Length: 116
Image (cartoon, rainbow, N blue to C red; front, top):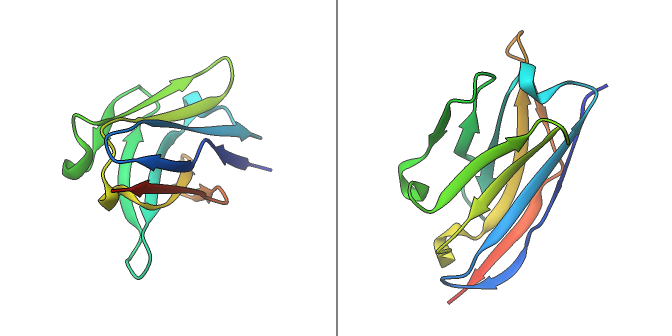
């Protein structure tokens, strides 16, 4: 059974940084695409970043140059380093894993709040 547990969210001032972690169990992250979505109040869930099984990374335009997705295979964990945070980044951030059948697993989410 696949489980994804996010951590690292919190309250930070604009311009600050946070690192989100997504610890996976039940499946090897190297065999799957991993990534992050976010959902702000009153808005639809938005894709933020992803890393393929081969290590290719991709980002939504609004976070390019500020966010970095990475993974630690030994810890079976994916990270999202978020720098130069803006109030517009405030959202619940969700980790996902997409397996070879294109089935998505989701974490419970972690709140990120950026104050101005």
